[in-house]
Length: 82
Image 1: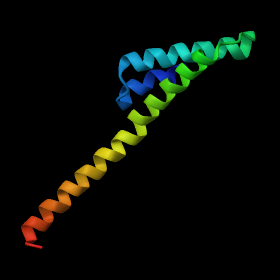
Image 2: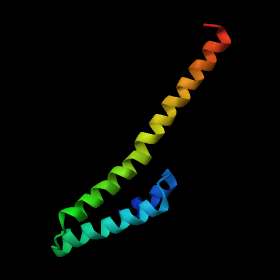
Image 3: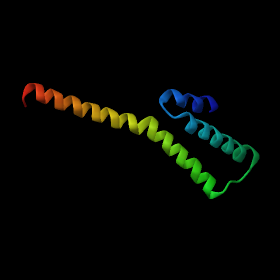
Image 4: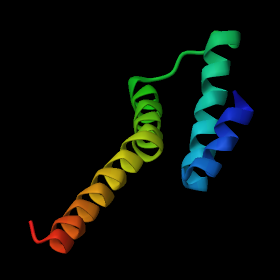
């Protein structure tokens, strides 16, 4: 898991978010393997980090691709006079 989190920098996730996700991984390990419990706020913070990473890796590229396609369609229509 550590390597997969570290690889997120290659997918455009900012280094500070990757560091925070790695910290969240450590908290998860402590919870799972050592039986530690964490507050609602701590778990909510980790969930927010995951949402941010998912947005950066999956949502933003799709949004940019849609905008790029729309620009291309407008240029194509302008060229053909449609």
